[in-house]
Image (cartoon, rainbow, N blue to C red):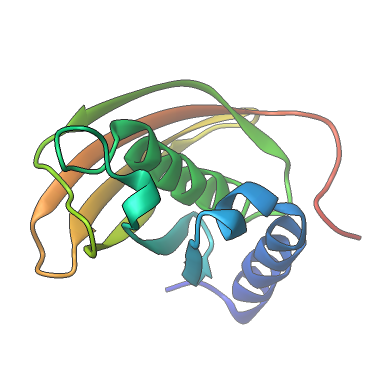
Length: 143
């Protein structure tokens, strides 16, 4: 369980990021919750996201997972950027599906960390698995 101060820092960090994150907001993502080293975002698949095969383009799924990784890794008011990632697209996402991306810290060192993100449908079907390696850059998100 995290401390009240750590939860407050995570929320303040997320609010500072969300205020400037035009890409995530523009895609209709919602920040569902955030805590120290974790974040949950959701996004509904719209007609503009569906490719010629009738399924969501993988790039949108990657962007949702990347955003969950970013909010989770920046939850300590330490600016972190993605250095390397991999994604496995497990099942197709279709028009009208609501996807949920849950990012979880796996390892954190002084200037780098590893986060896993599982993207699921509302029905609980695994859509994608993402792993991100992040590193710190100078500055804070707020304060």
